[in-house]
Length: 161
Image (cartoon, rainbow, N blue to C red; front, side):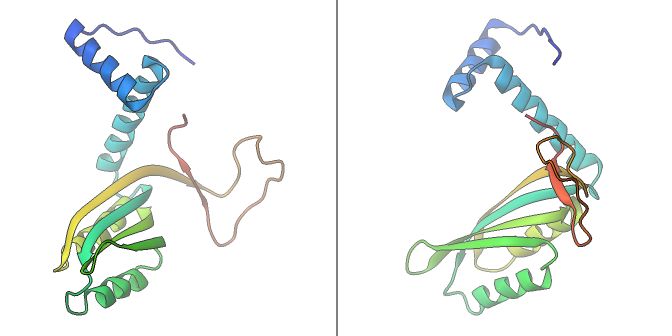
């Protein structure tokens, strides 16, 4: 691990310390590392839309909107290569929130999210992308059995904690 020294003005330091406390970090270093990771992964996603990601798409929809639930389910089936899992929770008599875990290229995941959020009756959509690297082996000593996968690759976060 490398030590990096930075200088910031007093008011920014106070605001940063407030952020550290409000998010429950044990130190400024932990908070700073997370901010750097977030900035790097966002940059990677912007620079290379073909890079791999995992993502969560969450949105609220009106299940009484004509055929909307059926259209949304059809969209998920049409993109079965992207959709890893989904969860639907009923909020009231008219509305549900759905959360879909996606994996694939940034451009394909973002296009799918745009398509879903553009559906009439869908609102409050939010997509959270996390950059990952695909590989077909275990890279750490945590897994004693090295093995390959014919059907899929492992997806690992690009920047470790």
